[in-house]
Image 1 (tube, rainbow, N blue to C red):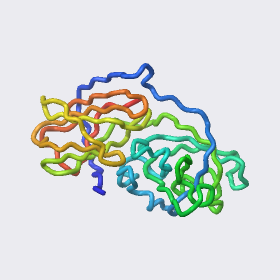
Image 2 (cartoon, rainbow, N blue to C red):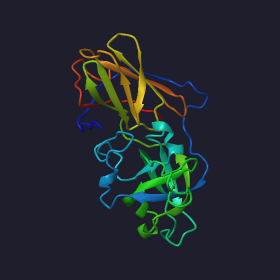
Image 3 (cartoon, rainbow, N blue to C red):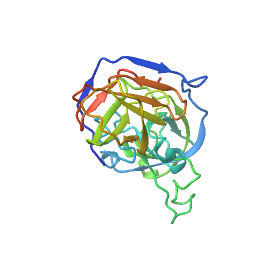
Length: 257
């Protein structure tokens, strides 16, 4: 997995926002029962990286309040960046007061077909399950419990700043990792444009990464994104300068909300 640079270039851009759904704003969903486990230790070192491609979660702003989603919630990577509130319920291991925590989806909890879905195969379809970082798990339950019942709901993501594009690839292939998305938190479709050229549709590579097989150097890059959930579309013009470089992260002053 390519690493994400922590150097952010915030540029003055012109932007167009188009709501392509009757209600493009994402609102909190109903509370639903599920279960939560954790992986790694108190340092959350094992949560860095992950199937969404966010790299160092401190550098990308997600920290340790993160979760690996079961296949049903991960949606082949389109669940990356989504946010959930949850609280431990009905277990003596729940922390007093049943505190509510908020986590961001940054990884996949893969199925374990050798185990029953109710006995070890917690992330097997069609279960909705959250494998949290240990620091996040400990905010709501005693870690020795291993697994606890929870109530969860998907909520809007609150982010500071705009959408960030971490660029990797080569002269003929652009791979963009999309982070810091507010609102629904997800990206379903993405396009890139070089200078005054036409829009090039990017294909979904994996996780939160989209790719374009084209020569795009030497001119500013603009991006167009559509939320997977709300279908809200945002156009961010001239996100990068003409001399943009692979290995850097560029921030647009626009975000889904």
